[in-house]
Length: 208
Image (cartoon, rainbow, N blue to C red; front, side, top):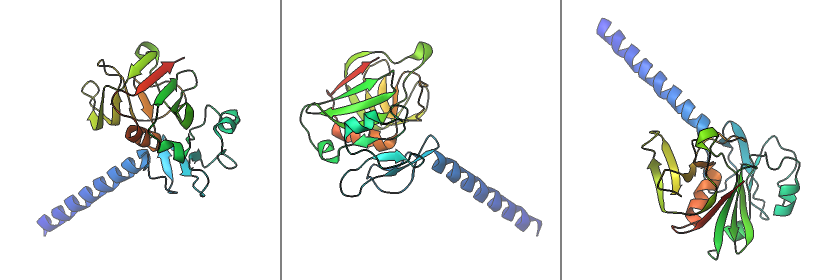
């Protein structure tokens, strides 16, 4: 009887641990890039997809109104650039012409350009202090979907390497101030489609 009770306690303890872990994981999930309406968590901020057949993007649930249809409207909105929202043009995201990425450290935003036109505008989190993200013109050197940092022993999904010194773009926690160790973090709703659109050799500009 004592052995049976001990076994039940072990089973209950294991079930509790599994439940706690699943809750913790769901709290930091960055969502799927299939542009669904399911809530997505980005550093504790819920965003939702706007895909009413005209425009697809992501906005904070707490922000009033619809996501602006044009990029000019988006950057003129009262919450830009501090918003966690992701603006994108679905048609341009499918194009494979001349394309590059611009990371703006001061605004903590990134813009993906196709044929000189903005295809996606997204929040980023870059390095701070002595680990600040270096400015300049870079090329994507390699790509790994399930990359893991040897230096910090942490996952960096959809990693796009910019320097052999460890700087790259990848999925990570997003704040509206610099907080990384030098890399450029993106929410998965932006990083995954960007990873799919870019290739090794694609140009990334990082400026102030």
